[in-house]
Image (cartoon, rainbow, N blue to C red; front, side, top):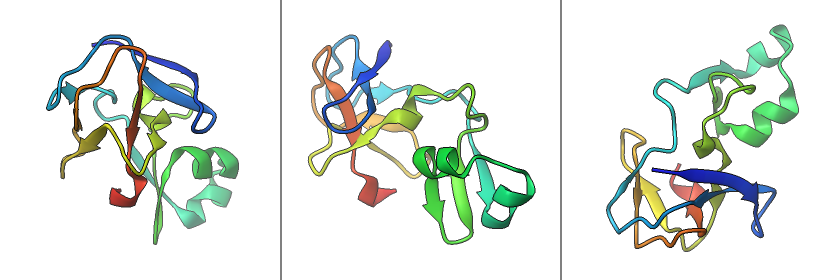
Length: 114
């Protein structure tokens, strides 16, 4: 399974398939345990970069679901939003192709479902 980060027409950098994936294929976009929760009050206390936290994390009422390390992020943290996504995730945050994905196609999800 191969992915590439490169400039996206949607926004900034996106995740692109380097091979084709058929509908239903599990997409291994994240390294195991590449996740942490950052409480809002800990951002200033731990001198975290607020811009990084906001750009690469999923907001929550109490803080942010964030990469374990902003220096070594899994490609999945670069997924862009689409109202017509070609990938989705389940309740365990395992990602799957919603439809056939062509090689060199950007992989997108619907942020509204996070």
